[in-house]
Image 1: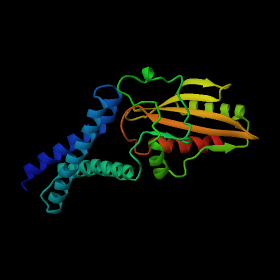
Image 2: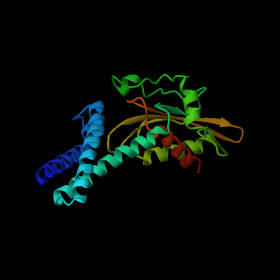
Image 3: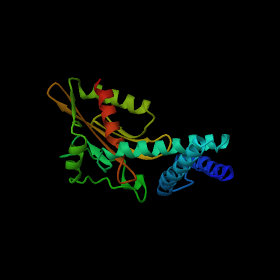
Image 4: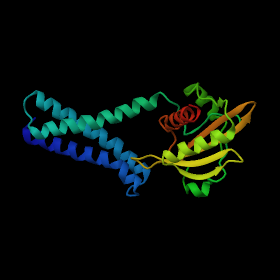
Length: 234
């Protein structure tokens, strides 16, 4: 391939990689709707990656310069991120409502559908999700600790606050905390409810985490619940 064509492809790969990098912030700050942002990310990564492969071939044939090196690095980097996300998401169920209690899941009271906004996912739990969750996250269960609810409530609230989540309600008497976690890069919001139930000599901790948009969450909600249970129960 002539050097000028290689240079053009390299330039395109670099530009697309830049758009891939900016897709998240553009969604976060309202420049693009989330669907368009994800589309830009996926398509940009794919095309940039193809360009990166072309640049690599040109370099191996000694037909590329510094621009081709940049195109190769940016293109293959963008493609690698996309592939990693796909691989990571392929092993988890395509659901976005995760809970430690699929029989009687914790309910949101302060975080209402109106507060979540138009076009967001429902907060009504679908029992059909239980079997998919069990298959994908078989170890995700309630946690029982040998400490009183008041102590666990204070600890849970400190952890939620320290993580920068927006607390909608913290009702110690009801043993319930509702908060919203926001993804740093994309700005996606997931709503979380923590329910504490007194037991003989301890407290049962149940958590539910629901994404506001999207059909699947690539395991984000389950990961959040597992991390929160470990932090609160540790």
